[in-house]
Image (cartoon, rainbow, N blue to C red; front, side, top):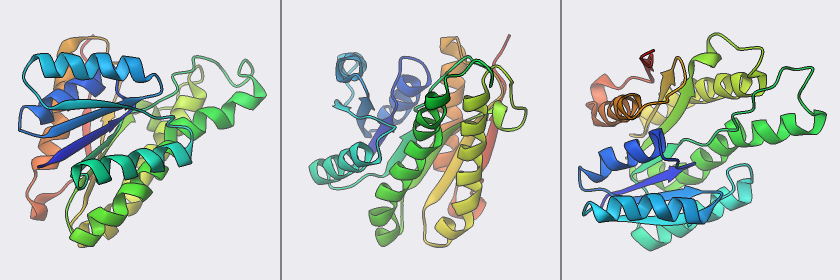
Length: 218
């Protein structure tokens, strides 16, 4: 059984990407800070005949992320695809942002991605297979003053993917990010992003890419 784990599952890109992999026969596990919301999304997939379960996770807490990884690995025998999609979408300038919230945002926006990758990598690298997919953003390339903590977080996501791509590739694990230059507010865009993730995962090992770019319509 192939297993797809989504961390930071939401009704847009998270659900669309999970469904794209579910269509290919993956057992899907959706997770979010609010477990009932993740369960609602899992139920949507199950109503379509897909294999889906839900879990609760605090993406900003490394211990919670590691526990989720261990739980999914223990239940399903491993994780074939990890999709980190969590983000703190704070709309505030540097002057407006509460001082104690910046590190909290970074803990979710990039710390959670690092914790998830670190936890899942152990078994992926040991068996020489797997994909780590990270939801990036155009703010990594053009930071926005009104979404500063998110911009810095997306820069961190891009650096994480590029920083470990070659090392992981040598051991059979594909690390990739979709850099989304804009906000995804439509089902069409969410589906397009999901397809980018699927295409990255499906690339032959000799043609692996670390990044795909997508610009939402409108």
